Image 1 (cartoon, rainbow, N blue to C red):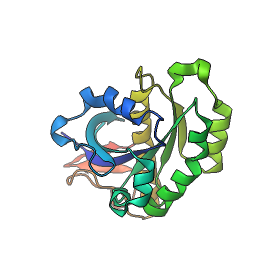
Image 2 (image 1 turned 60 degrees about the vertical axis):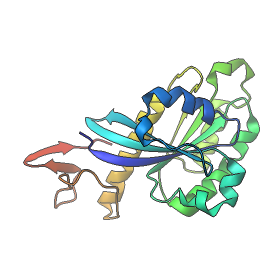
Image 3 (image 1 turned 45 degrees about the vertical axis):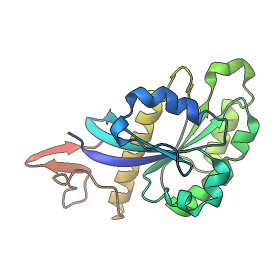
Length: 211
């Protein structure tokens, strides 16, 4: 049984490895809930289990940078996003330099959602052109939620990437709930207690969400 539905968007310049990532993940996606790239977006669903919760992720891969920026219909796909993954290529410095542009667009449309900065292609370590230190500097400058490196080609850290983004969303859930701000919804028979504490109810049982 699914405890919640969360929307994750994946961005990055052309050539950073979004297509490779999608191909690697195809066996894990639900083919009945996938949408082919028709407006610069591919939609897939993925089930993950984190902190004892079984969650369905709607994964939106924004495949074409220029089309996305110019097409208002594509930009509308950001609505309702709970988190974002900004993908760059560790062998291509320009892909990291464009992160501020992506960040500005995300903040404009989505507000303050957790953003995970992800460096791809660690399988090409000998061609590395962006140090981890440089990436961390960018992450801190733009107050991004976290940073990770992966290989979409070999699958290294890909599972960890999705687990981390879910944890970031749950942490953001706690923060917003503590402030009385709107949060994403869990299954209808789950709810925060009256004191706003980080507990959800299922009949008479309670489960604690750890950030």
